[in-house]
Image (tube, rainbow, N blue to C red; front, top):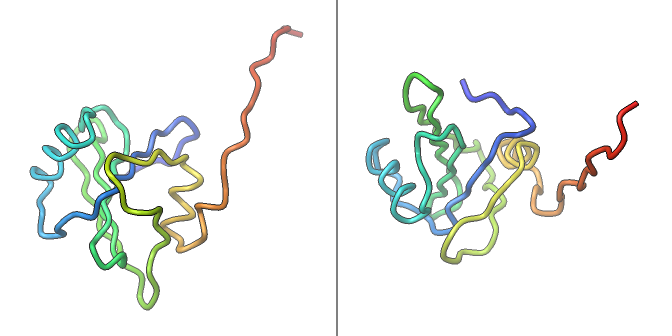
Length: 117
C-alpha cells in the first residue's frame, strides 16, 4: 500500500518506457536514469509509449511495490516528453491516477510560522 501523505515525493520519468520491464529493471532505471535511490520511499512513475498506462514503483519498507494502471477508455495526462524527471505532489499524483488534468494545478507555497503562540 502506498500512502499518499503530504510529504510524499513523486518522481515521474519524462521518457516513456517499455512496459515489459520488471520491477528489477525499473529499479535500475531509477538509479541510473533518474539518479535516485529506488529504496528511499519515494514513488517513481513510468509512462507507456501510447500514454494509456502508468507504472508506480515504491519501496514500502519491507519490499518493492509495483502497481500498473490503465484507464478503461481514456488516456492519462502527461507533460511533454523530454529527458530527466518531473516532480509531482501527492495531490497531483492522485489527480493523474484519477484521469484529471493535474498539469494545471500547482501546490501553494506554505510559509512556516515565525512566531510560536
